[in-house]
Length: 245
Image (cartoon, rainbow, N blue to C red):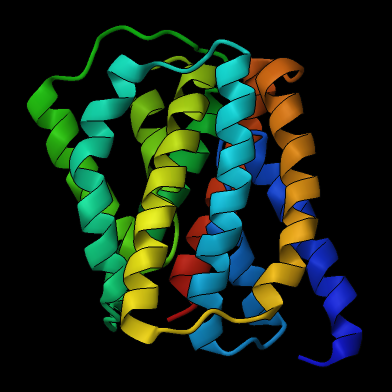
């Protein structure tokens, strides 16, 4: 990437942060896709995406909590085991293209469901503790391996299983992303001992986009709009996993 390309990269990440944060996500899968287009070194992409994730997830978690949508009772069983396993996933650097393609197809399936049926917003039941703990562990490992915060997987799970309403799912996912991104970044830095300097420049752009997106998502957009935006996010994330190794 040349210095002349940096403003365009920052603008792309700002737009990604706005879109993702409006549904309670932090944008790591989108950041990875955009940074790959600008030919950033693979070793720089993962820690940069996780750092940007932490910043945007912090803003999003605060906005959705302040708007009264967060549920600690729903959050902690998913987060408890995900945090240490996100560290393990961040520390590992495994070739897992076939696995990522499978996950990407699952995200596309979820996206289609939200596009076709965006209006239902009922939380019919609470997940069992063993189910939440085990799923949280798997999502934590997956988040560390893929360089994301895991919310891209948690939100559709909560909504499709009818374990949470739309904004509650977004609020829980925002904090889930924050703790897992922090754990994953710590694992990555333990392994590589390197943080790209460009990450700190790009942080300003994602903070602007993330602040605006989380505000509109938590207080302005109706839940049908949020679900359609979530579908777009899932399509982007799925494409990133399927078409990049």
